[in-house]
Amino acid sequence: MKVMVLSHLFSYEIYPQYGSFVTQQVEAIQKLGLEPVVVSPLIYLPKFIKTKNKRWQHFQKTEKFINQEGLHIYYPRAIAIPKKLIFSRGFLFYIFLKNFFDKLFKKYDFEIIHAHTVLPDSHLGIYLKKRYQVPIITTIHGADVQILMDISRTHKHKIYQILQHIDHIVVVSKKLKQELVEETPRKIGLPPTTVIYNGIKTYDRYEEIELNNSNTKFNLITIGNITRNKNHLAVLKALQIIGRKDIKYHIIGSGWFENNLKKSIKHNELSDLVQFWGAKDHQEAMALLKAMDIFILPSIRESFGLVYIEAMYFGKITIGSKNQGIAEVIENNSNGFLVDPMDESEIADVLRYVFDNFNSLNELRINAQKTVKSKFTWENNAIQYFSLYKNILN
Image 1 (cartoon, rainbow, N blue to C red):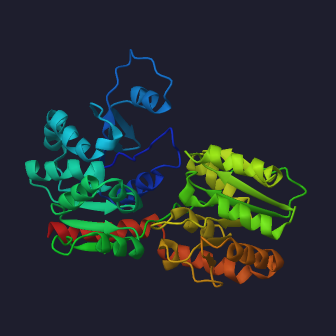
Image 2: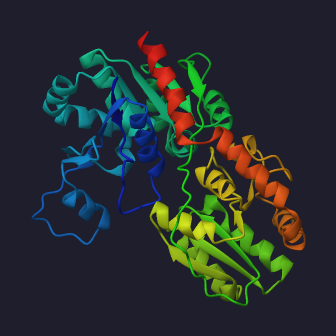
Image 3: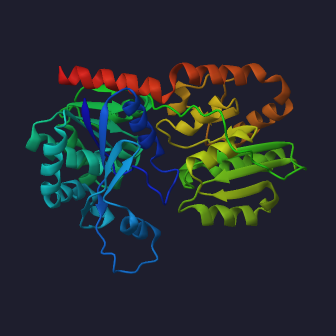
């Protein structure tokens, strides 16, 4: 079965933690014997233009075609438009890349299109569906509902409009499905919608990480883009409440809120408690995660969050947010802990409990690993998608 995977998130080298879930899913689908071909349109920028912008440099140096161990990946180029007009980007990609797609469909004879995100990928995909008479499914991740719909009424209307042309929607958690249904007007409705959880790569070997903090008894870690939503400040306030000096809070990632976070740390004289590692590729991030004791990410909004699953896979005590996607996985005080992300005192109470009972929480760690290995691997995810592809084609 030949599958066109449309994703602007594929192998985004300048933000190594960004979009790795798409890459890993495609690899899992390929291992099942399907034939995915990835198309990841990039913004056109002539090579003679010199720029210090890492994102633009990435666009310039990326080859238009890569054969990655038998996986064919295309990076066609189209003109740029302002980010605030992202609701038009899919259509412009279609207009400027018609010849490219004509040749591609002739070469591969695709049976189905699988787009990740509504804007811009599914927007482009619905034009390809009409032109080549191929069904399309869309995987909706958190940003479509939790960010793009909030930008403006125009963005929200465009998402509704696009979804009417999709044959089947996949969401990555029940929480996200609920939000999507609540956001969608009843008179419009939604196509058939299925929950398929993302998975993780089941690594067993990682390079050993030397932390070099002999005065530290507990190492906490968080991994992800540094934004206000990830709620690092709540963790810091909780650590202030606890008042222990033998704790180190490790932050992996980068983002627009990083400078604000560092200013707050300096202002509250917490520099000795925090270590910034910057953005890391997936394998480096997992090696660091494996060296830690506790994973904590009390996000304010989180559709699912694969990094929680990765922490549980390594048997780390994992703390997530109540009433968010991860609450479908974590059973409080059984395989992890759930906290109110807006309540620093509650976060402090849970952390204090973990510190005081750390050596007696072995059963919780084992339960966490069992949960992940039974349900949340990419192999399991790929099997569910394969079944969905066949049902749509039939």
